[in-house]
Length: 158
Image 1 (cartoon, rainbow, N blue to C red):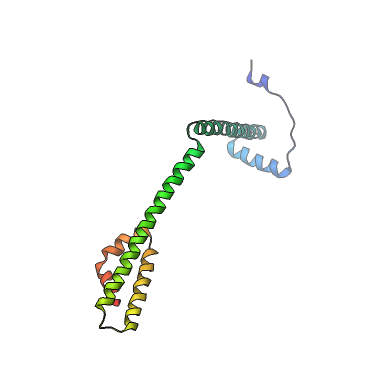
Image 2 (image 1 turned 30 degrees about the horizontal axis):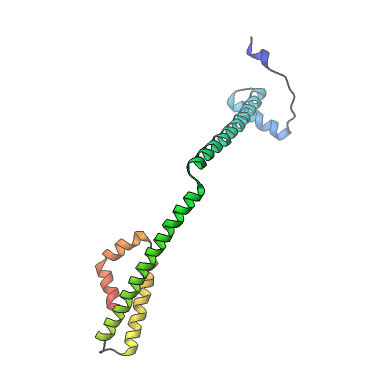
């Protein structure tokens, strides 16, 4: 059986602009207008079939994942770990606050030579530097802490 024997003749209507575009592309490809239109139809059918296959495969994967991993179990584990991390942060916050106030007490005991105003200024500058430190990105922290000359300069300002 000849390949041409299984073809069906059909008529389509194109706008003038569409026809001009198809003719230009067909000329570049060295094919006829009809062949270029057939290629576009074939591409469209392949894309539609591909989309249907993707949707079908996605639904199978989703179904299998839900059969193995139950969303409620995952949520429970995530919530448990989130609570654990939050508690750890609270502990470090309490230790940081205790260290801060202990340092204040030590400075007050040692700083009898300065005025109350000088101490308050030193405290405000220290808090400002602390806030600045906390706003740094992770990748900036190591280089900041390793620059001892800059750290000494900041400490001298206090």
